[in-house]
Amino acid sequence: MAKVRCNSCGSSRFEERKVDYLYSHQGKYLIVQNTPVEVCLDCGMMYYDGAVLEDIEEQFLSIYEGNKEPESYIKIPTQTYCKP
Image 1: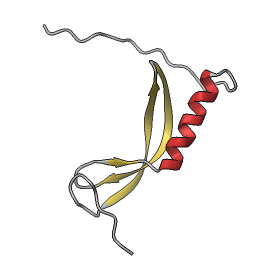
Image 2: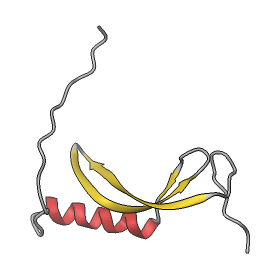
Image 3: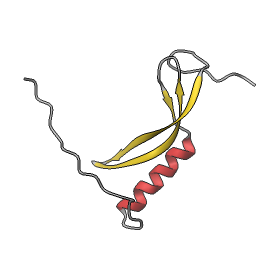
Image 4: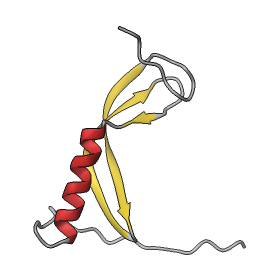
């Protein structure tokens, strides 16, 4: 079996982690906590399993179509970038 290599740096050193994933679509957002990811230990590139991303998309659609309630809401300040 071929060893998996990072597309960015070529390393074969990876670590499984859990991260907060921000899904966005047409100006709407969903933060998914504890999302599994493989992280390259040499450059930090993150790799998500396709099935996990499909699952997140389904959750997003279910929430925004009103079929499911999210676990919680957060309030985030926003700011448009303007050069000083």
